[in-house]
Image 1 (cartoon, rainbow, N blue to C red):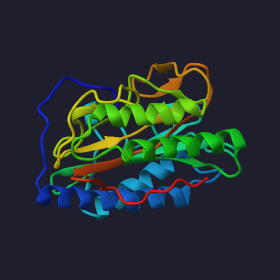
Image 2: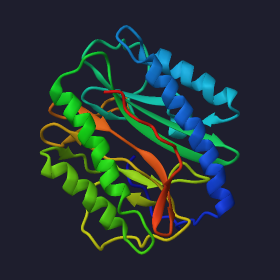
Image 3: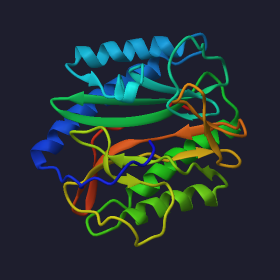
Image 4: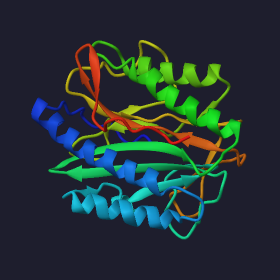
Length: 260
């Protein structure tokens, strides 16, 4: 998600975090469903429809649907598409990779997570990219604790990715989340250690590294949403919603593992 205007950081109460965890559990169930559907011959629109039904049946609302005019319930970004791919008639083929991004609003609170999946058998190059993107998330996650700064999270993501030879997509990143889909602080995927927002208990935000093979130059397509790697090389995306809780971070969107 692109960084927005500065807003006050909203600290969440334990009751608020419990509600976000409930939203996050629906996100996790939706990801499990999406993972079960991903195979050659399935369209991105079919995955979107199934996830939409699950979210509504759980009493929630898809956070993305209608957000600034976004027309679908999930984002489904294939191969060189980084984020915000619009589901539709595109049919998945063997060797594709697809990033599924899902947000849920339940009882007034949002949660958000993304995973990149393989479609059938994929190249070792794509498999390594998916694994590195998830690894970059965990590198950032381990810096989330009271007294650290957001730059520590960003620097860990950047260092993990770049030392493994991957491009870090800049201009897009994580974000605060709670009663609104996007709140402060912005969570960059690159930064200087010791810089940025001080992390305090009650802060909730999404960490979401986006990595690619080759130069990390990104462009937005004419649909006004889909962001792609300019070179056409593949990209991957991994995200969880987390809460700062003293010496540890809570993952509110449960254990969402990629299929590789």
